[in-house]
Image 1 (cartoon, helix red, strand yellow):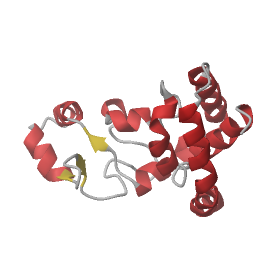
Image 2 (tube, one colour):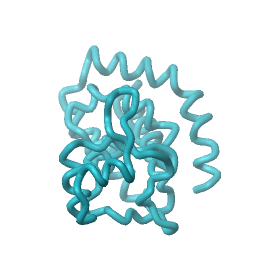
Image 3 (tube, one colour):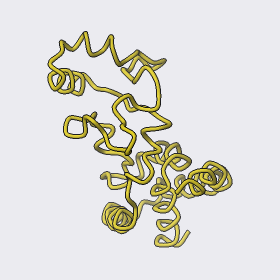
Image 4 (cartoon, one colour):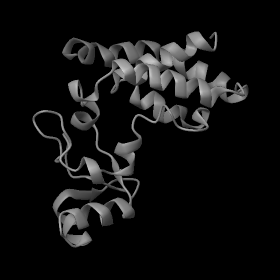
Length: 164
């Protein structure tokens, strides 16, 4: 996994222009069954991908925390929401709550999330490759390709399936 993660940013960069063109075409002419294709590609990829061997998303990026996330997680810690915010979060340039630092504070040495059952919505939905109306999140997908090997593999499989 380590060598894959080392090569991934370069592979994603090399494919960036091609993928941007692909997603532009996809937005202009979206296949009617795209959501089903994406669900199938996502499911197939995650039959062979174990996030616990990687956790690169948790090591290199931080999720956005919604107000609901803050409420739920602070309750889990038996803290007031403001205490949780002050201890773990900061406001970013988009005025969103994000972690004060990465890797994620809640990631343990075995790549397990210590707040998995109450984790932020952004974490629960990552890498977003099984989301409805997938063509609307091409920018997120392009940003996730250098981070997540599964996203890279899903996009490559998607281009083959849709005959790009």
